[in-house]
Amino acid sequence: MSPAEIERELHESNGVNRNLLELPPRILIARRTMDNVDHGPIMVAFRNETDAAHYKTYGVFYRGDHCYARDYIETKRINGCLNCHELTHSTHSCSR
Image (cartoon, rainbow, N blue to C red):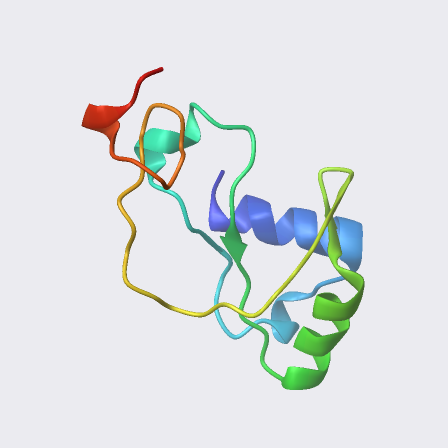
């Protein structure tokens, strides 16, 4: 799913207009993983704290599902399992 498609869905389901966003939405999972999962984190950067606070309080609807929103805190990348997507072990030690 492209940033433009995400942006369109946010607008149609929540009234999030492009002028509210600082940057285009960004998918936070690797492209190679996207075919294997049906959900994942999306980063949406609002221009002002008031709009961000509204969506953090009430969440957003995405493809008909209610999703929660929270602050994005950049951290060191965690290399989890690409087979089962658990963060507790690496791919080579996966038992699935």
